[in-house]
Image (cartoon, rainbow, N blue to C red; front, side):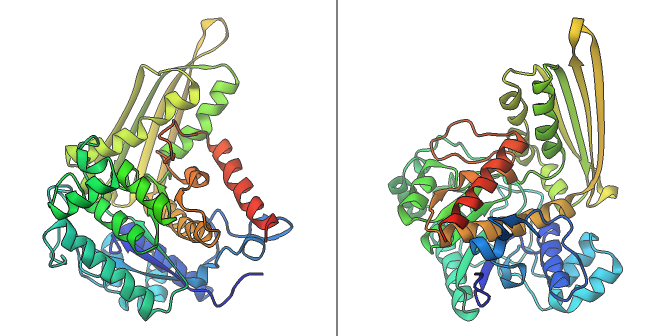
Length: 407
């Protein structure tokens, strides 16, 4: 049966962002009965003949305690007002809980995310000092809230990638030396990932930033038996791509070209207005299609444009050119007018619950079964991950069922 007294901390990097404030508000609205569970993919899920929480030990939504870091030190109500994701009723009802939360000073580096800055910065300039500060925050969080479990979720803005072949990223020993030498191949995202693993906290990278997927940190997670998962949450356009592409392949419809464009105006969009951060994002979005179809799509174009008036109301538009029987050409057009944070926030919540469940089961290292949630899922051996949506879902459900049968 579910352990009702279990409390799981969720330490969020980017707590003042649109996704995180939406997640915190959503959990509070669920708690007070002012919202339903729409958009939460595991809500009401039945596994092995009973609710998933009861049969597997997955913690309930009301067992999550959220805190975290942000470069903006405003309380979460002020942050939520600025992001304009919540409607006035939701903001009023969740307001007291949001007002009570102020982000901890963050370990940032403007060189890796030029368009998103702030003054709420931890007083630690070197990489080793930043790690020590983040670890101290995690220990304090665990102690003050009497937590039974702890997961760190990276919801920060997209960083530019360093050189992934940098020597300090290739082994744990080299990474440790790099921290001591203040090697700037080690990014802020890696600082948080290392700190989480060192403190025995599960780690989730919901961003395209390079973090726990470098060889040094994969090895560290395996050594410490800490679950890690990522990267880049699969929410809107790429989710649709991983649903449609398998259908085209199954019907032997050749994809001749696929043009994808996105416009959004939230803080994530502002971060992606920097070419280096944008390149990190395009690397995760662009790798999906060829893997599913089994051949390269020469004319696969992906664009992301910052368009301030849209705010969080993202629009993703796809034009797909197909070749069918007798060489006849056809077109599919998809216009997904979505809410970026409304799609992302519930996935971040579910990932925190699932990562904690993996930790309860003693399953450390890369969590392949969580690939369903990501554009660029991690694999322990660096092999090409599964991208097809339906196959990823099967892997996750099988993993949940296997755990249920062993309880």
